[in-house]
Length: 304
Image (tube, rainbow, N blue to C red):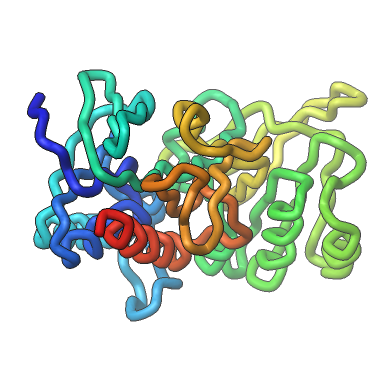
């Protein structure tokens, strides 16, 4: 592994990370993107993107590929290795990987936050084929159909309300009797007539072949088992930011998100956070791209 110091290392090759690579490259900086999986992040699991300005309809994989090509065009180097941490060596930031390390003048952490899975067998094969994690992104594909939402927090109830305006029937499945969402949302979700509540219940299995066709349920109080036919399910039981390995260099909140404002500055000079993995209210494709832009320009300014 070369000892050359890269201007900006970006950890994560999702929308925020690749947008940062585009802007950092255009600023004339040397850029290295470290990604442990396939570039594109969560968007590659979305069959169609209809809410990104300028695109009427584009496949998630196509969107990710176009952004990757653009980043490469402006000089970004993609390295597919798992990042295990960051060490500080004076002004140099050393990014540790499973295979060694890379040194940089500035680092942008764009690891994102992955949706917390249901935790049942065969779940992976239905992601993008009946399982979704974003009603705003994918709700329109279920217009006039029957869907379920799993969760009891703000996101789950908000998704349920959004989907009630599109789907013919929406089931809200929650493992408790009471919702933990804000009172206003709880009141709001009780108004649409096409919403039905299935409480004290957990999803224990999935039905379907090529696409999701139904859910296996179990009531936690009575133990009764049942099946529910649905065209899709929206999972909103929380997210899992992947920032544990950075807690030694930047502040992380109790939920695991890196503390950073709209300027993307973390508590460590020269380390920036962009995308779903930082503290923020709205997590959308557009806000990820915006974060990538801000972080890249901030990192470039930091280098001087």
